[in-house]
Structure formats: C-alpha cells, structure tokens
Length: 67
Image (cartoon, rainbow, N blue to C red; front, side, top):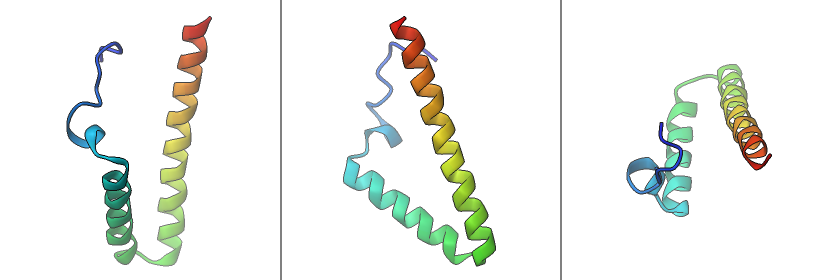
C-alpha cells in the first residue's frame, strides 16, 4: 500500500463521523442480537483488542518516522 496516497477519499473511509458512528451502532446491534451474553463479551473484547493493536501499530510507525 502506498502510504503517501490519501486513502480517505472514497468508500468506508470517506463516511462522516456521524455516518461512521451510526454504521458502528447498527452493526453492533445486529451482531449482539444474534449471540448470547458470553459470546458478546468475547466478541466485544476481541474487537477492542483489534482496535488497540491498530492504534499501537500506528503509534510505533509514527514514532519511527519522526526519528
């Protein structure tokens, strides 16, 4: 992937903050209604872990690029 290219100009990444929040809410409700409480806990924790790993990856990449 070309890191210099603006990848936020179409599709999923071009949604407004409100649209992105609404999409996340709708997906959450759809997923949560189809599974039990234990499964919701596991899925929720897994998705938070994915998000944290993406944030860690980006923070390290930014740090190395500033050196």
